[in-house]
Length: 392
Ligand code: FAD
Ligand code: DHB
Image 1: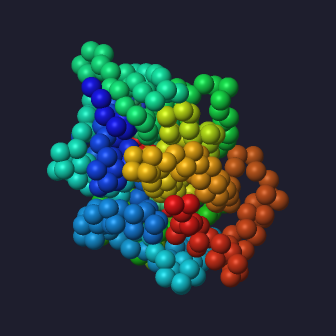
Image 2: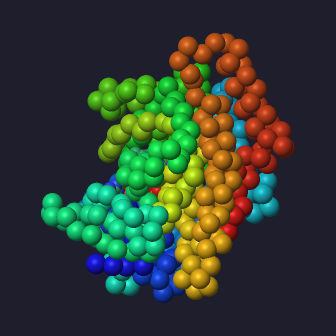
């Protein structure tokens, strides 16, 4: 078999790349390890930057967002028993974000690819990448345990943090930066109308919690827990008690409790691997970088990479130019380090660190006061939260 662009991984990064290339008449195959059902039901991120929304809409994928997306103009930081609203749309002169779940983005992308006759191969694990520094790389994959090969011009490594693409780069050709945080998030889905109209962050002395939502009848909530915690350690009563403690304040209505339908623990790390290119292999999304979910940047960062990569591949075929592809890593990393800074900074500001002393706690409070109580603080947050400018 052969194609122009072999895309390893059918998450948001791989599927969006395949769709954008298709719009430009470039052929690709997406090889996805898991089943279609699995990738469409995987519960993950929820907040799309203005630029992510625009990118998807411009690519003809706006219908689901228009029908079910929930545009947001403000975020509520709760601490010191009070609510502190940042109106990021006002601060940025009109930029918004949208709550629209990642699995819906993935579902929209898969539908668009399949309707256009696109090649998205599910249940197809990639096992090895070869000849990456030649003009004819080879992707080895399996179907029902049988080995196969796909030849291509370009390989896009969109296989997430635990994929194999990053490891296919020689160890001495890359540098990893890694920080693991000493806590995790327990995420729940509850059948209850959101208790507040905005995403709400509870920055409490007993730990962090967040209220977000998925629809007018479903809330998505998170709470800081131990890094090795298990959902089984958290009874529904304990969850609601902890969420009330961290999110309720004197000047807003309390949380509303409801039936919990899902519980899961997400570990928290900052990670980045440089460079994002090796020969004809280009890493994008979680394959190259992980951010802690404070800031809601993981999916949005993947979209930023794909914008650059799709343009680079287009120039490669249309103009026989590798100018953008040669700059791919540098263009992505410059923005990505700013995203890392924002995500790590928020993560450090709002969580309670084990063994943290009173001095650190007061500094965190001063950071929160600066964030919400000064124009400079609100503006910097708002520019980052709604999305920094793209390289391309
Ligand atoms: P992925 O979505 O990870 O997609 C990679 C795909 O590659 C997967 O479908 C995988 O099955 C496939 N794959 C892996 N190995 C192979 C192989 N060898 N062969 C073929 N296919 C392969 N971000 C937020 O902003 N907020 C959140 O609340 C949040 N929660 C998260 C919870 C979890 C459990 C995880 C893992 C991530 C979360 N994120 C969150 C981050 C966000 O979901 C990711 O940044 C986003 O999914 C990145 O998209 P991607 O396409 O790069 O990678
Ligand atoms: C979600 C919202 C956020 O603001 C965030 O930082 C992480 C996740 C969510 O809705 O899932």
